[in-house]
Structure formats: C-alpha cells, structure tokens
Length: 249
Ligand code: BTN
Figure 1 (tube, rainbow, N blue to C red):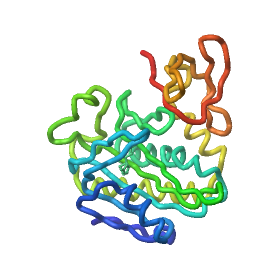
Figure 2: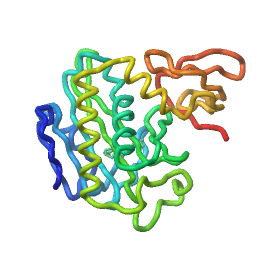
Figure 3: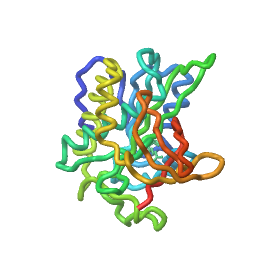
Figure 4: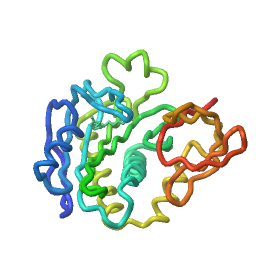
C-alpha cells in the first residue's frame, strides 16, 4: 500500500484486507503490549463499530477504516483525542477536496449536513488513569456499491464520487501527520479555535440525548474544556461533557 510516512512517531502500519474491527483489533493487541502509534487500516470490516454500541457500515471497500493506538498521553486530557482527531480529519479531507467539513458534537464529521465520517475513541484505564487509547476513524470516501442501508440513507453521504486505495492512503497519511503533530505538540487554544470554527451546532435548537430523559435546548457555545454549553427550555444553563444531540430543523 502507498503510505510514505517518514516521521519517527508512527511505529508501524498494519494493513488488513478484512477484519472484524480495526478498533477491536488494536484494543486487544494493546493489552499484549503493542507499541504506541501502531496504525491499522482495513479494506473492509465485518463488524465496524460506532459510538453507543452502534454498527458502522464498512463492509464495502469504499472507505477509510483506520485505527491508531496512542499511549502515554500527558500533555492533555485524553478524552480530547476525539476532538483532536476531528480537527485532523476535517483538515485532511479539505486538503484533498474543495469541500468544507463541519463537526457535529461530539464525533461526527458532516458535509452539507450529512455524515461522511465518524470517530470512535476507546480507552483502557489503570488506577483511574488512561493507559492507552485507540482512535478509530471511518470515512465514507465513496458511496457503497449498493447504496446506504434504509436507516441511514437520508443522513449519510460520501466525500468523493469514486474510491481508490491511493486516495484512501493519501487521506490516511494526511490525517496521521496532523494527528501526530497535534498530539505531540498540543496547543489548547489552537485546537479549541479550530474545533469551534468548524462546529455546526452553536446557535442551534437541539434535542439532547444520552441522558435519562431527552430534553430540548439551545447550544450557546463551547466551554474552554470543550464541554458544550446549552440552555434548556426552562432557562437552565448546562455544560455537557458527553452524550449526543440531534439538531432540530
Ligand atoms: C461513529 O460514527 O459512531 C463512530 C464510527 C467509527 C468507525 C471507525 S472505522 C475504523 C474503526 N473501527 C471500528 O470498528 N470503528 C472505527
């Protein structure tokens, strides 16, 4: 495969034609001591996973399905890896297309309101401290041959009309060099401003999900710790660190 990463951070890039999930593979190999910055890329996945136990469509060879194992994160809160990966993915896609990506809190990358990429960050803890994390990126480079399944066909899209492994590998390369740079030289204000400027949720009426009961709110801003500042219909200001929102049209 074409991946000319001549930096010193990336330990190894493992390529699979087919695998259940690149995230599952790295999470289990990490336990056995696989080195930091090992990358796995699969042509397709038989059990691609998304957040909240969802399935991620990746059986067709039409996307970038990649995971990165990162250990020893010290200079920032490891839960920010999803944020850092989101910025890296947007910049990488934009470097290969003239399309402007937006970020839907917390882990979806959209183009013109439709999801083109999802990010799944998983971690293992030791003594309440994260010992390693796996960042998984799934980008719809082109539409699957048989189209998207019924349940996502109105909300999913692809970045390009055609897929090639060269294009996939170039985008992977671009993401990895940005991710490496942002992780190794983390500058809080830079990431916050890049993340905020791409957010498509500020000012929007949303339904907040993932809590005991869904509730409606307006998104005001991001706090400096990247939590989402919302005001509920009862006028209560809340900061959300996790969960999910659906944008009301
Ligand atoms: C989401 O949309 O909720 C996140 C989707 C993340 C998908 C990627 S594809 C590569 C890696 N392997 C997985 O099983 N999931 C992630």
